[in-house]
Image (cartoon, rainbow, N blue to C red; front, side, top):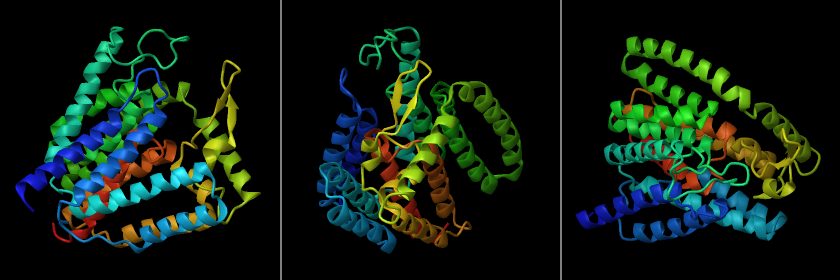
Length: 369
């Protein structure tokens, strides 16, 4: 691989990851533009990959089976415009994972430093927003809150915490000291899930590095995490509503199409709704749990295939290898965040989520420490 090819690949990868995360058009609903950026960004990325020889082979029978299943499921049972659009996103995501897994650089110093810099820029932007200065973004609800929202570049508070948790393994791998920048994002993000995800990944890494440091950090992190969850997030959190929505979704699918599900994208158009404190309805466009939403959309068969995929990942893990431990440290925050958020369904995080899965697959191909 020539140096020019390597530079082009790495440059486009960084542009794609940060571009997905930050892309936003003021005044417009930010989900659709982010989805568009992801789609065209992946297409461009696949074009770049045609010029770059692969570093390692990657095949995965279960990932291929899942893709084949959702294609057949959509064509045979749910051939609607909405499902066809989501199938396109699903296909692009799988193609991105494959191409990245074959070419991604497993020295995370550059990407870790880039993510640390991006987190630092979010902290700087937060400082401006705290002082009612925001020359780019506007409040998402100016009629209720005309002052700038304290969300950095991330559009929503919870996304700050998700960014910190998902970026943490790469930042820590590049320079453990730089991981400090994740703390203010967790604080302002007010997401218990993100706090748990980051702490779990950190403790896993420390357990295999130094047991004494692990126990010291464990006590401090758990105490701080419990305080944060109980005093900061829980009083204003939506955990009870989420549980009610999940139960409603499971009941709905159990009484309709449990085996094949309702089709990709069906959760968003079903119209699950709860009442807010002000008496206004709140529509849950996403389940805020990727696994329950997958069951709702792909059914029991989809759940079985997903289980087989993760079981296959687990069967290849040997924790005596450093790179396998790194793979688990990446997978932990991705799975934990997916339990209460929707990183794969949000264009802002879809690229980063696919990159994380690709890194896990690539790292598991390496059987040396």
